[in-house]
Length: 106
Image (tube, rainbow, N blue to C red):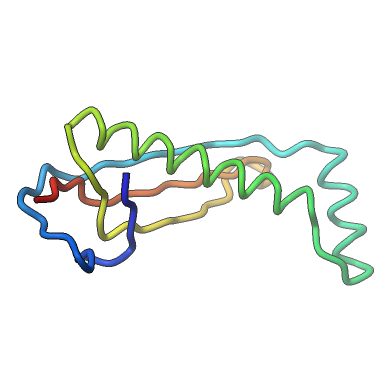
């Protein structure tokens, strides 16, 4: 499956647009991970725990979107957009949503 943020794919011809496909992932934050991430931020380091959570959520959302495109019989998803949101009363959840247009290539 080809996935691109662009609306065209160099070297490929889009023959059919099958519609918008999406994927979402919501992950809860771990109290201990948040604590150590805060310490890392205070001393100027990068938060590997948060980076790992973001990566996992992004990969989950992308896989869901690609699976939806595959169910539609598509070869690619173009015009992909990723969004990140912090949810919950105390910002304890992270949502990643991804969307794009499923297309057939010829």
